[in-house]
Image 1 (cartoon, rainbow, N blue to C red):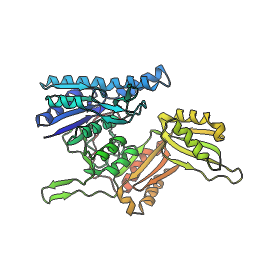
Image 2: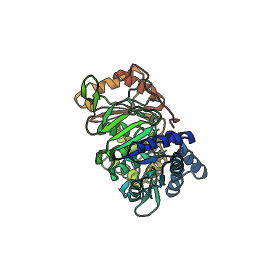
Image 3: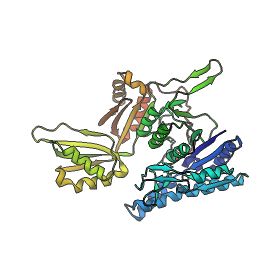
Length: 430
Ligand code: ADP
Ligand code: ASP
Ligand code: MG
């Protein structure tokens, strides 16, 4: 029996009862003969509450100090979990990200892991302990300051440790039974997926399915670490995310290959906003100047559209989407460069949502795009922006239309299950 890395999200450790329940689960894995490293998130909505608190003190808190504050959330849960495990008669030691050897670059609030040196964790488990690691945090190689990995970053901590420790599997425990064909909070008839390839999961995660963080899936694919997403509240098998199709034993048929579906699922995201740069001269170099200003401010953007210019004015509009949390920074960066770029004005719209349909089978099924647009139009949903990749179509709509649109698309592609199997065990969905 090898080493397993288990990650428990905030809703799994939301209160003392939750922490005790998780402690029992970890001890079970240990009793089954595994070495166990458990990565833990902050309790419940602690991270959101700490951000709210910081904003009451300062509207734009310094990145370094915000990271110091937010990492406190995971420290609370790691220490409590270690105590709860000791109370069950097993030895456990908790470690901060820095103590666990999670080394990052120095970009506060969204640092990237550049190395993992888990010497202390290895020693701890070799001595018979259960190691508990605070997720979502590391230490900058250059500045030695404490960093955080961006929202949902505990998933990445878990996969990075699983890779560095050569774990058998990385188990992600959460408040739903696995990865579903849509967010079970929105689509009651969503179906649990038994197996999904890294590529499809990457697109779902990048399109807003926060059950797994995009970066964590990227990391798992690079190091070929199988992920098992499952509930910490039920004993059910969850979803396997890996490069190879899962082979399952069925009683009647012996070994059965689980086929990949044409459509993996529908994702939605209401965390983005749209910026429109109005009255841009339609000449070479303009888009370059706009997106240089944005990238110099270290802002990641998602979709871009440039409208056809009006022949009479020679001016055009360029719209792009970005995380709402970066909106103010983007507007500031563009205003500062207004003279150089030469646009008329800026419009900011944070009442948008994005709906994406993901599936590797799209490549060979040309009707998918038309069916997707038909489903949206039947539901009376207006499309504002469109973008596509080989295995994804995304549209931007009004935020108010998103839930209805997701349900309409889910039904139109025959993804609805016959039963209401999608259970949400906890969490506030915040
Ligand atoms: P944790 O606190 O365990 O990290 P998250 O809230 O980050 O949990 O992620 C779990 C949530 O992801 C679920 O409660 C669900 O609402 C949401 N979610 C979005 N899309 C999906 C999907 N396709 N399958 C399962 N859950 C999804
Ligand atoms: N606590 C952090 C967050 O809420 C990290 C995580 O839970 O993965 O984003
Ligand atoms: Mg999460």
